[in-house]
Length: 469
Image (tube, rainbow, N blue to C red):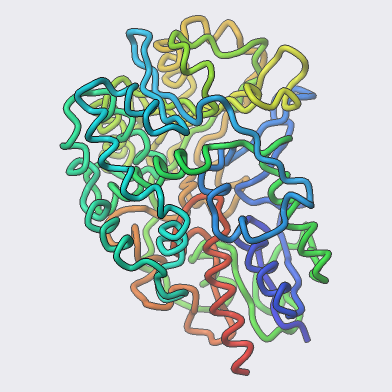
C-alpha cells in the first residue's frame, strides 16, 4: 500500500508529492493528460518552432514561492530569465508606468506627486518580504507566523478594497498600474482584500522580479517531476480518475483538482455546493514576425505588459465580465512577451506573444477583434506582425485544463470571503469529510498562481495525519 496518491500533476499536485516524498513517504501521481504541467505547460500552439505557454508564462509568485525556493529545482533544469523590466503599463500618449526591480525607478514613473506615496506604501514591507511572503502564503493554520506584527500591518493595508488603497495616489499612472495588478486575479477593484493582491504583486517584483522560465513554463513542471522521481515517487500520465476505486490502495489521497471534481470522484455529495467560480478568460497566443511595436519604449523592454487606458476603463471591463454578464468592449489585457528575454522560444528574429482578456463565466463568443483593437491602440501595426494565432475561449480553456471550470483560470472566484477562505468556510481547508482525502489545488489558500504553496500547505496536513496513523 502506498502512503499517498496525488491526483493531478499541476504545480500544486507535484509540489505536494515532492514534499511527501522528501519526508520518506511512498507517493504516486496520476495525471489525466498525456504530459505533466497543469497551468505550467509549454506547447507549439501556432507554428513549428514557436513555443507557447497555454496558461501561465510570467512567474512573480513562482520565483518568490517559499516552497519552490526550498527545492533544488535548478539542478533539474529550471532557470529563471529576467527581462529588463518586470512589467510596464503603456498609455496612449506614448509614455508608460513601470513596475521595475527598483522602487525608485517605479516611483519615478508615476510622476512627482505619487512617487513619495508609493515609496511609503512598499518600503516598510520590502526588507521583511521573505518572512511576510512565507506568513502570507502559509495561512491558515499551516504554520505559526514568524513575524505577526508585520503580517498584521500588511493586513491593515491590504484587506480593504484596492480602491481605498489607491486614494493615496493623485495621478492616473499609479492608479492605473495598481488597478491592473489587482485585475490579474479577475477581482473587482472594490472587492475585499484586493489591496493585498496588488501589493503582493508589486512587492514580488521589487524582491525578485517577474521572470519567465527558460524554454517555457513546462521546465518548472519537468523540474518538479524529475526531483520527485529521484526521491522515489512515480508519475503516471494519460490516466483519468473518475472514482476513488480507479486508484491503487493508499493511506491518503490528495487532489489537485477543482472542488466539484473532487466531490464527484470521492463521493462527497454537496460538500462544495456553495463554491463559486469566477469570470473566464479569452486568450490568444501569437506567432509574430518581429517584436510587438509598442509606442512606449518601456513596454518594449518589459516581460509583462498590462493594457488599459486608465483605472476607470479597467474597472469597467472587470464589472462587465464579473457582474454584468457581458464581454467588455475594451477589455483589460494582460500580455506576456517571453521571447524578449528568451530567444529560444521562437525562430531567429521572430517572437511568441500572448494576451488575454476577461469574459463572463462560460462565455462562448469571440473576443479576437476587441483584443486586437486594444493592442493597436498602444502598438499600432500589431496586426501586420501576426504570422499565426491560436485562440481559446472559456470552453477551450476548460477542455485544456479541467480545473479551469467555465474558463476561470483562478479556479474559483477571488471575491468576498472566498478571496481568503476557500474552498469552504473552515480552519482546515485542505481536509475533507473523508478522513483520507485532501485537496491541494488553487481552490485552497493561498489561491491562484503558479507557486506550489497550496500543495506545500496541503502536504503538511497529509503528513501530520500519516504520522498519527
